[in-house]
Image (cartoon, one colour):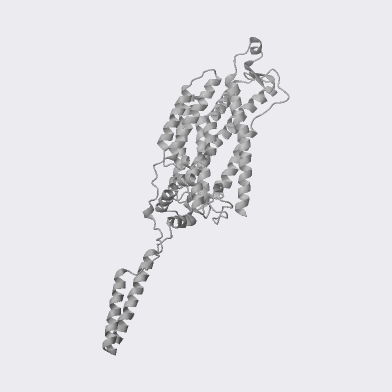
Length: 464
């Protein structure tokens, strides 16, 4: 029942998280587009303190949008703020991290082959320290003088993320590593809103409400808020990728998964840069074809090694039952000879006859032993290759991938995949090969699947 309720909680918060994320990222895309699309206004608007304007048509109506350099002539009665989209997305994301990765840390968070955490508490504590420690370093950089130089700041953040990506792969399971980088990006983005953008906006609004003209301090805060907002915009596409990555083990379970994520981050950031430049009226197609080329190179580099199907001779095959007398020719010859000897002995005397009876008994025993050996030779160690492999599958895989999982923490088979028969394996062949060959399955290797068994399953599935 506990696993069942956890599934419901995960479903609710995942749904809530996606809804909030759409609202937040949608707002981010819109306002960056709006800010970069503003053009110089006519003089009469400039005289009113307007720094840029834009006209748009949508939903059957015209919109006139104007941005003030700092403060409007008078404070509007209704002012819309954009903050809860960010806060809700982060809170639901942390709830998801707790429900999926912390509540079932043994399966999803811990990889004993990397770090043998003494307990789930140790792994969870390391996760939280890793997450908030990374954010703290980011905040130190952005508040220092290094944060005032766009190139230096961007370079340092890029290096920080590379180190964090590599570090996550040394500490956590492959799947959890991708999610942790997504959590770091999400925390940085939410922190930008809470600690940077909102304080600057409050300072500006309070200044206008008091009837004061914003000074240099407020102007500097406003500029920092704009830079943080732009940083959030560049983080959106890599963040979305990490959110959907758990559906594709070929990405995070790659032997160099951390490098895969770095490449994807570069590709998606370049695509985002193309659109930002386009909004400025500066269309540079190189920021599209360079990511396209990098994507092709990534696909080629990540291609899996060819898989050799399991040879038929590698597994014992049942022998066909004999339809004729299984007694070897030599046994028949011996029996005939013994019979003749017995007849001659009986014709001579009773003593010889008794000896012949004993000889016959011995020969009959030999014949029976010979028949048993032939029969035993026809019985294989395992009935077939299917049975041999399915024994491994039932022990290592079907504890989770069954209609009624017996593995603690699972109320239903992961991804709805049931693997209990060769037919099941044939249906899910592609997913099985990817998940098992990459080492992603079993989760956390809870069932202790050996490397030899892993190779056998992959080879068998590839031959279906």
